[in-house]
Image (cartoon, rainbow, N blue to C red; front, side):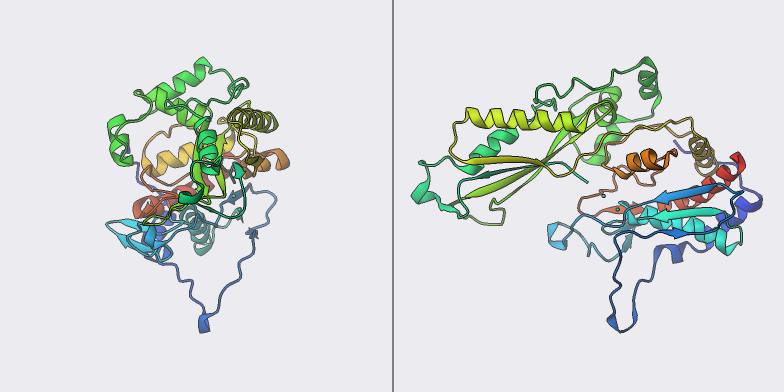
Length: 388
């Protein structure tokens, strides 16, 4: 729970006052161009502010691309027009990840306005799993003419997808758990002290029942153990009404969340072997192919690094509470790449709430989270400077 933090003073007070006074500007960002021009955005943007070698440098990263969205999917407003209602900012990318990127920009801009510039940097990118294709022919079939005499691709695909995970969430691919790092006593204690109200969590996510009944069970399977999720099927009829065809070819999509010390190549081999053996047992005359779209190794940070210390202090300054150290199952492959290539500590510092609905309809970020998050990032800069 949040408590009232001590009133800020000095530079921090000036920074917080500036953010409060300009929050409407931070919310209503004007991106219009004269004469209806379009801005051609490059795939990566790199900006640098300040070049004093005596000062610490913070590189912050965030992706600006978003998941597809259409108002017809169930949005209450245009997903690509920021809409504010009841203290919430609705729009695709509001919480994942345009809002948090702008919060970093707000923090940097505030120091610039107050002429207290350090050396922050900014970047902008994204991933996912496995696809399997089952094909009889390129054309669909009339079910009245061909039903009952074919190995139907959809039936093969559904059987393959059903072989991946059981009703308790346990992955059925042989050997998949073999390289999962053992749970340590220190980790167990970390999960025990994390504050999570299961009833509130169920209500906020609108889920009647989770697979696990205890806080520790939910957190361990969210953050600590691998999971497999099925995402969709291409080639099937999914519009209103009926269309009595047998798809000639279909594509299934799923992903596996990897955890230490799982290996991408090993998992890829295990998945392909399992699906090929399952398909072979069906004696289908169709053709099946499995491919991994993209695979990244799992990543874990050292929470004792300086920037974690700075972030904890900033959290206490802005929100008056000690933050929980958590893991997350989101696919952010660039974190591991940054850490491996530049040999620097990497930290995730999110702003969103559990009910923000990232990747879903009516995605939002609470205005309070967005503005206070801008203060959090500004306070983080100050704490990093103190540690150097």
